Length: 284
Image (cartoon, rainbow, N blue to C red):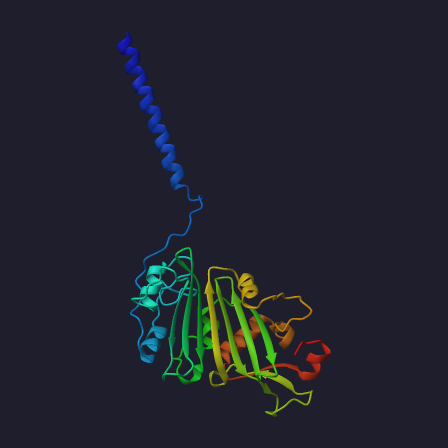
């Protein structure tokens, strides 16, 4: 009798343990569970040494590395080991919190291309790319404004900024996919006059030969967070705000503005005039 009781107890215990293991396995497989991103060891390209290397890498299309992924570096996922091994091979990065790469055509000149990757918790968290004088070296269908707008979702948050001092008009576009880009173009005035008399509208001409610099910030943040980080104190409704929405500055809806630049990249967009901007309180 005693042996029979022990036998039954063993069967019940085994069934109970099997049930617990099954429930645990089901819980682990629950697709609703929240997982922390794990650094990935993606194959990154060879370290670029020449301008041709950079141009070739910019032209390569990788369907597995779309923005905000750049050159295999995906914010929130790519490990610090991979980043440093690619951008700064052989460098001791044990105490570093960022990795950077610069390219100048001649020693002592300002870089025409740079990449800065911020490292947080041993993974890439932000990639910043700066392209200077892009009309002189940037390959087609890479980061020129019409192409970027054509490969991204159609309705970004978009803002225009006019700087009289720099004689530049800046376009800032931000996407919830984690992409913020700013383009600086030469400030032009209707009639090609050299200085405003007040009534001629300013022009936004998205021509590559008028584009002095392109800046990109790539992260795993949404558009609004990136805008607030990029422009300290940026608030869309603020009284003192140099960033005016595209529709406010041009009278065009954002989809119309984007479509015009994509379909007519050699056509200028008319902005408000100097007098109109001053009457509306634009903070030059």
